[in-house]
Length: 288
Image (cartoon, rainbow, N blue to C red):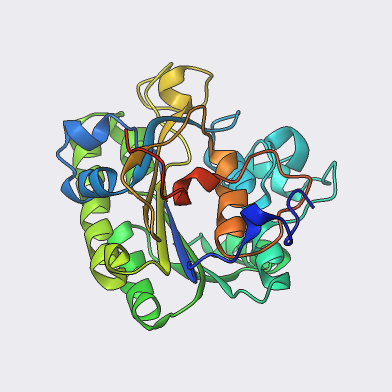
């Protein structure tokens, strides 16, 4: 394990529940461009970076696999949708499994799949030790399904994936009016989550908002390239006793899994490629 539970930096956190939201395809510059007021409030009151990076290839399936396993695509072997069926090149220790071993319940509210992919999606969720609920397409429907659980939960880990931005980007182009409308829908959904969780009123709740990738860099309707616009994502931590500040850079998508584990008091597998962002909870750090 990377971190020993006996080490001073591993003292128990006040955080008891973590909610991670992936806003698919949300570029950092979309937040001011389209007036995303709820996201802007999270940035203002939380710890954030608008220059975080994702993994390569910057495609949803690879990024989400990295988010759930804590390692880069070269390690988990998922580069394209068809590689989900391929043999893994390395032994993995998924974040939900690590949380389950620490007696933390893990749930996910995700976009529904076509009927012919549902059995595969279910098997993958079980392999990751994730209690997954597959809902209709769009952040509004996903949040509607998740809200009763968010209001009732007192501890545990919940993840949501909202596809609106990615869908609009592919169909109409990143930063198009249609993409802007999709970004605003996700922002309204975020407002409903913040209202349900009240993260700023309690230290036991940590809300994490990020994107899996950007878009419109090399191709106005795609995101699969090494272009900085495709690989740069927003990363925001709010609540959980986190003080308003800019995150120390560099910071990446791969830093999220170890940070979630650390915040919830679970050991971090030594195979993980990122680092726990312990500075989030440094009370004496000067906000910047």
